[in-house]
Image (cartoon, rainbow over all chains, first blue to last red; front, side, top):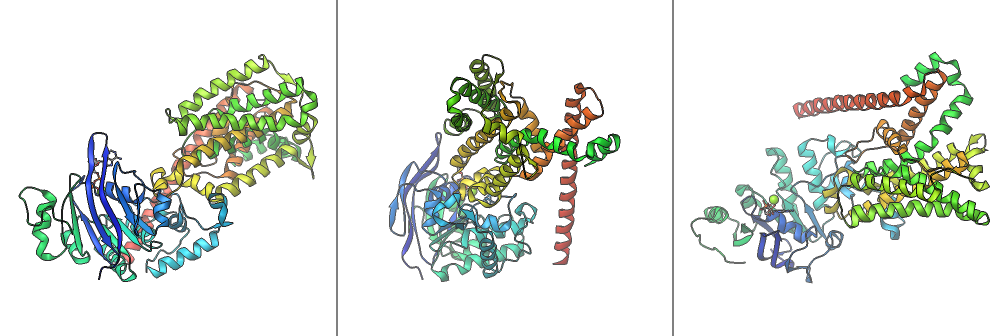
Length: 258
Length: 310
Ligand SMILES: Nc1ncnc2c1ncn2[C@@H]1O[C@H](COP(=O)(O)OP(=O)(O)O)[C@@H](O)[C@H]1O
Ligand SMILES: [Mg+2]
């Protein structure tokens, strides 16, 4: 099922002051594969994601996207390489419309070479937003509504759409279902499951092991910034995964890499 | 609105065309300055140095014209350059060097620039401005006073910038959620830098207007910025950033101008004018809070109903 390697993380390290949030973490993700990134609160999952997406500059280590290696890259540069991210805090603008949120930072502009100083093509943006939400089967009645007025589930859905709609190579989702009810959770997982068929690589952060086992192929486990294991995400590995997350007694497969 | 009705009832002269024109002209410099203040407020900050920037620009322009009357054409470009430069200093300190809170830095700049304008002018008015500056400030075009045209043009351009240009939308985005802005790849620091510089330019344009109206360079304390910020707030902008409107801000400035004008017509001592402005500001903020609370409840109600239906 898995195709070419899309993302390779090589000994990625990041500290805040004298606290090492990420300690020489290495793994790869291939096209068509869903890799779960697991770990307790504070394990470094969000930090890893922000290093990959260009929000943080790693202290050490390298990242390779589609075979191109770099130490750090701008957010816009990473996005241009086909990467979409759904952040844990959603990164939405409550004061702006649904359509504007989907395109914030990469608005369709005229004339194009002017980039930030061009006119925003509002019509095109609205049409494209409507098509995108339809394609992903997310129903928002009015795309001009400020996002701050929507329900939690709708906001989450918009954040997910924004992360996956324009990403051709890699989608990273940081706890996209944490705040959701059962039905909304199902909707988000449905969107995630559709990605591998399009050849997209997926990294999914989640605290819900049932959910991880049901959608992911593999799991990479972090504890206090260190990579403590990588296993198949199957029901049989449930116990192993739990013990890796919480630490304590050593589990089989500990420290092993895929 | 209530204010206008009140004055209209109490003084029949208030609603005559010539008095309304008067109000618009009297409000024009606060309206222009408020546009600069608005930009900074939308991005989630405050710039109180804009008022003394106006004074300093007028003084520099007047001194240049006094000493080199043959360089009259250069007066406006130099004034604009001074405004841009002061804005750039603000940006440099706040955004590039990241020294302290923006409000405190611009408060410091208020005094620095105020002092410079007293130094350059010798502490007094410097009379004389080039003819073309006087023309813009004091003549009419198609029966509309120059200052009003200036405000409308500046308002139109600002509105275009904030609502239609990506850079302007990014100003709203940063004011709404600065962290998210950097996560979606908006060049946050470049946008912030530009905001103080554009505000400085608007202060300089305000200076051209006030210098033209008084035919002089006038060193001032710079506290006019407080009235401009009041206009921004009466116009419904949020000091938390992310919310504000160009036309509502201009209306806010006109409301403040109407209060001043109306009280004069009613023969109320000018000592009461600041009182009325303050009361209007507090009332406006109170009403806005009430409006938001009502909106929030309506939204909640709606959300609950939707949840019940599905
Ligand atoms: N911007 C930051 N500044 C300082 N410390 C941080 C920052 N971001 C994360 N940390 C710290 O790094 C560690 C890992 O955090 P995080 O990556 O958010 O964990 P997770 O997402 O796995 O819960 C935590 O101890 C957290 O306090
Ligand atoms: Mg996290």
